[in-house]
Image (cartoon, rainbow, N blue to C red):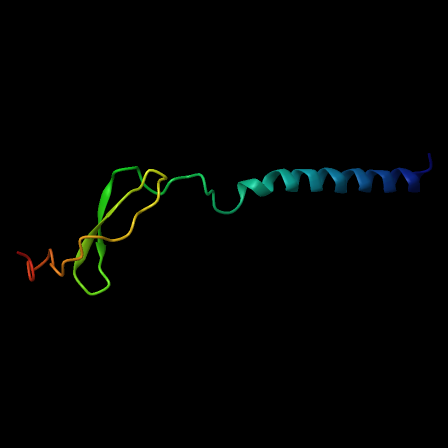
Amino acid sequence: MDKKTCMVNFHILAFGLTAIFAGAMLPACGDDETTPSCVSGDTKVCPCSGGGTGIQTCKSDGTWGACTDCSGCSCDTGAGCQ
């Protein structure tokens, strides 16, 4: 095998290995949709669209549910609370 053929084969091999390595690393990039953002049953305070605060509960799939209990009550001032 002459020197030119050897260099071409080396570059093809190097490119191929780089492509395989890059392809193997792609799944490690971006959002991991299997990682939950919360623990099922956890709750947190959330802002209500009309003002005031409500409660969000973590669903069994690890995502936050809708903001509920938006009665117009402000936890900071007690305004609108019964």
